[in-house]
Image (tube, rainbow, N blue to C red; front, top):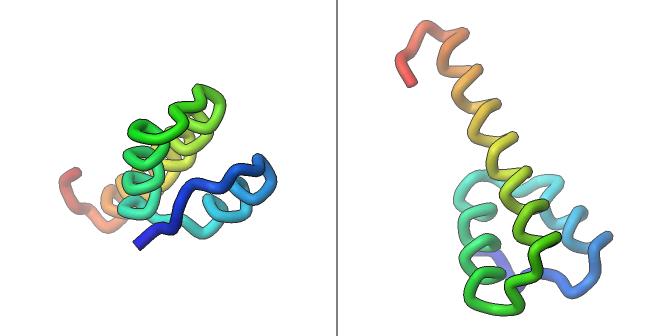
Amino acid sequence: MASAVSKEWKALNDQLREADEPVCRQLLEKELTGSCRQRYLLRIHSRLNYVRAHAERDALTRGEAI
């Protein structure tokens, strides 16, 4: 489970660097119900999109439907 969303930008980026889809979703929910900082929301969403796209590309290269 993801810890609280970091208060510092650099720490958030460090946290997101290894975050998978469930962690990104948890961080997004916590930020939406907490501080709701637009810049943080967009950064977390960006990582979530990257993780999803990467997983979909992997599935496609294996010949699986997405």
